[in-house]
Length: 314
Length: 272
Ligand SMILES: Nc1ncnc2c1ncn2[C@@H]1O[C@H](COP(=O)(O)OP(=O)(O)OP(=O)(O)O)[C@@H](O)[C@H]1O
Ligand SMILES: [Mg+2]
Image (cartoon, rainbow over all chains, first blue to last red; front, side, top):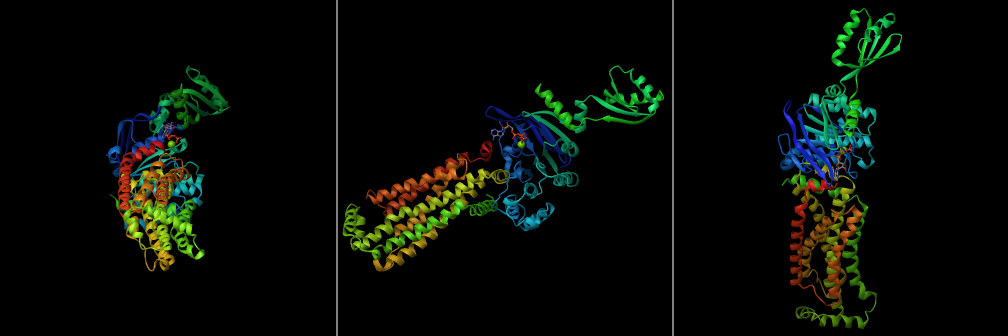
């Protein structure tokens, strides 16, 4: 499935009364990528997952997922997709193992393989010891792990994870991150990840999309989005203390730069274009300034996110 | 139809439902009263003391108002035998029907409205089951136990009736043909009715309790049946019971057809 189009939507929309949950969404996702879907509460992320799995009908527009139309081929499509829902949606009155076994039947896991597959997943998610207990007694993290296991029972090629690390402790969060990476990088599956954790998105995702009120504000690799949003960067420079006056003199020739002396050997400048950095360093160096460190202060995906929302609400 | 998926839904619902005390207690208690306690009481009545003549006279008055075919049936009975037959064969019949209706409606309330309440529906909707399979699984999960309880109950009722009233009647007198029709033809239909009505109600209900209470309204027609017998307006003859069953099956079919049209997971999600 790698490099093939896995999800393609065209003007996909869904209204609830007067609320537009998803607004003319155009989205293309390729096989094997980890796609991060970001946006405020109520931006339309969960609704999009529902539309893409054929469990909710669009008000307008079309979607093709794994070559199928979710509206028509929903049941067939869902054999190939796995969804971790926002709330784990587990049967509290059943044991962990029973929860998995029943879903193995529902997802058509070959009968001969059900037991081994269930045991394997219980092992992967470290639930083997508690598998015979009712889920009602599980902690939040255990529930989340069980729900993840359930979403992977039938080895889906396209996996939707709606806030998989919400409420998890740092160790559990890291486990989930490792799992996501493995599912994608080693097993070639496609991941559609809704998250409010921007660091997580920046670290894991090949591409991210930012939603606001059902509209897609921006889409691209985290680095692309940062570059698009922040044309001008800040740069920290460490020079030999003796060369500081020389460096400041040189920099004063760039009228658009705001220069600030941090201490006797560190300068911070704001408003420099990425493309201008090599030339500026060359100039300083040619003038005889000894440069020890050049540290562009990269905005994070989080900065981009806030900037995009500010722009959208303006 | 994916039978394995349907079986999985039935299994899941049964396991989950049997752990709800609000379901299991009435499920055990009501059949126990209906099938064991009530017929025992009727059979033991003559032993507890003399039945006043005025009561027996009243029964005979009631018989005189019955259709001629039934009067013929009762012709050879002593007043005491008449009392036993009236109670065990006729008056308790509508009560018997309450059981499958109640079982179906309690389980359906738990499995539809309860599932919404416990937020377990969402994962189920994301499975590859079709809407029809989902609906069928849910229906069978309530209907099969209801019919099961009704049939087992019928057997218990028959045994108890013959044990306690056999001596009065001079041998095995139960089940009558009318009761066979009641148990095998009407009870499954009534279970279906309780089920379908509860599901329709559940879609509007907030949770299990809510759905259960609203669903209980379907018992009203059965109470009407009971009262009309007690007042002599109508009697459960074999023909009438056959007809009643047919009518309920038709009603089931119509409601199911009507309900099945809006049972779409995409609609359920619109309301989750
Ligand atoms: N079944 C529904 N009925 C009515 N409105 C709905 C329904 N589902 C979603 N909405 C509305 O659609 C909008 C988008 O909701 P959605 O759940 O997709 O947001 P989200 O991005 O997943 O938010 P969150 O980050 O809080 O999970 C919200 O305004 C929400 O209230
Ligand atoms: Mg959401």
